[in-house]
Length: 120
Image 1 (cartoon, helix red, strand yellow):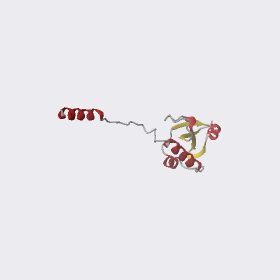
Image 2 (spheres, helix red, strand yellow):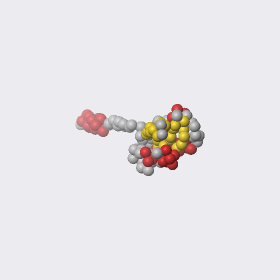
Image 3 (cartoon, helix red, strand yellow):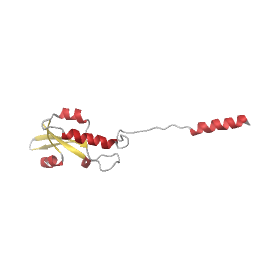
Image 4 (cartoon, rainbow, N blue to C red):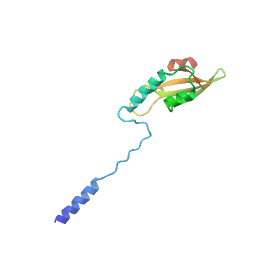
């Protein structure tokens, strides 16, 4: 009888163990981590100076959420969008939740919705 109870206990404990696999694409930074990252982005953007080189901005802020390139009056502008004000914690960042940074000839010429509206 003891052997039967011991075998049952052993089988039960084995059946109850499991494995948890977490899969992420990097969108989730923990509890409120995205808020901290966006606050840091806002702080870094607010410290940028006109004329800052494109590569320097990338090294300071990292990979943007979105990028655009537009030509106007024979001038090519590159626009980088960094997450700064998400409205939902759904893990999806849309352009309206980002601050645009505008570059002309690889130099920062403006940032924010007002600068983007002026360009377009």
